[in-house]
Image (cartoon, rainbow, N blue to C red):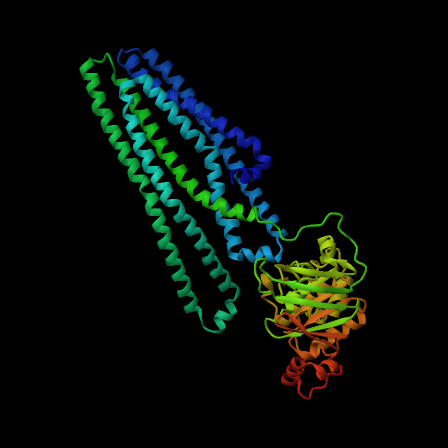
Length: 580
C-alpha cells in the first residue's frame, strides 16, 4: 500500500526528502538549549560569572533562532509536499475512475467513490504530512533528549525505561483494538453519503410527496448509528491521553524525588540544581515526544484504513482493455450479434442475455421492445462496449467491438442513455460534449433535428443559457432532446436512443424520428421504447423477453406472428393510426 501511494508524491519528491533534513537540524539546535541553560545556572549564576551568563545566553538565543528558522522552513515544505501529494492522489483516482467500465463502476457505489476521493484522501494527506515532519522530528528529539539526559545523569535516566515500556504496551493495545473499528466506521460513511446524495438528487420528489420529515428522520438515524460507532472507536483512542498524563506526572514526581535526594545526599557532587533543571526539560521533551509518537500511531491507524480503501480503487483491474493495433476507422454502421451471452457478474450462471443472434443493416432504423428486465438496455450497451460480452461476439462495421480503439468506437457509436445527464455550465458547453469543435451552425442543426432549437433560441441567452448541475432547471423532455442533440453532434455511424424520448409527447417524438430519416439516413438508429408508436415505422423491430429474442420483424409482421408484441399493441394503441 505504501509503495503504491508513494508513487503519487511525484514532482514533490525533492521537498519531501528535504523536510526531514530540516527537522533533524531543528532538533539538533533545540536539544542543546536545556544543556546550556543548566550550565548558566551551575557555572554562571551560582558562581556569579555574568560574562559567562551573557555569552551562553547569546549562544542559546542563536540556537533558538536557528531552530525556529529550520522548523518553520520544514513546516512550509511539509505543507507544500502534502498538498501536492493530495493533488496528485486525487487526480490519480479521478483518472482511474474515468477509465472504469460500467462493470468496474458497479463494484463501487458512487457514494463510496466520493468518500474515498474526499475524506479518505484527506486522512492520507494528513498522515503524509505528519510522516515527513513529525515522524522524523519526534523520534529524533526523543532519542536526542534521552542521550542528553543520560549524559546529565545516567542513574536518574533509568526511570525512562519503565515509562517507555508501559506506554509502548498501552499504545500497541490501543492501535490493535481501534483499527478494525475505524475501518467499520469509514465503510458506514459510504452509506451516509449515499443517503445524502440520493436525497439531494431527488429533492423535488421528496417535497412533492411531503417526505421531508421522513428523510430527516432517516438521516438522523444513520447519523446516530455512525456517531455511536465512531464514539466506540474514539473511546479506545481516548485512553491514550490519560495514559500519557499518568506517565508524565509519575515520571516528573520520580525525577523530583530521586533528583532531590541525589543532590542532598551527595552535596551537589553527583548532581547540581542546574543539572536537575536540565533533566526536567529533557524529561518534558521525552514525554511530549512520546505523546506525539502515540498521536502518530493513532493517525496512522486512521490513514491505514483510508489508504487501503484508496488502493482498492487504484488496484481495481479495468475490465475493458485497449487492444494492441486497435482499429481506428469504422466502415459503416452494420451491427451483428453472433450467439451473444451476457452476464453482469462473471461468476454468475444467471445470464442477462442469452444466445442473441441478429444482423442490423447499416442505415436502418431498429426498434427494441420488451418488458421491464427483458435486457433491452443491456443489449444496446454491448454495442459501444460499455460492457463486454460473456461469450459470442458483437461486430460493428464488420469488426469485433473488442478490436476497436475505444475512443473511435464510442465516437462512432453515439448513445443517449436512459438517465439523461446535463452538466453545470451553458447549453452550448453541454452540446459540445458531443463535439468540442462544433460550429454554431452544426449546433443549430443538431438542435433542429432533436426538436429543441426553437425552445433554446427563445431563451434570453439562447445557447449561452445557464444549465444547473444535472439540468434541474429544464424539464424531462427538454433534457432528453438536449441529450439527443449532443449525441447527434458526434456525427456517429450508429445512434442509440435508450428510452430517450419517453418524456416528450407523441407529436414531438414523431417529428424527431422524421428528422432522423431526412437528415441522417445513413446512420444506423436503434430506438428502445415503451410506446409502440415510437418504433412502429422502424425497418426492423426486435422483441426481447427474459434476455432472449422473442421475435424480429416489421410492425405488421409482428402483429401477425408475435404474441408479446400484439399484447403490448392492444394494451397501448388499440385502434390507433400509426401512419406518420
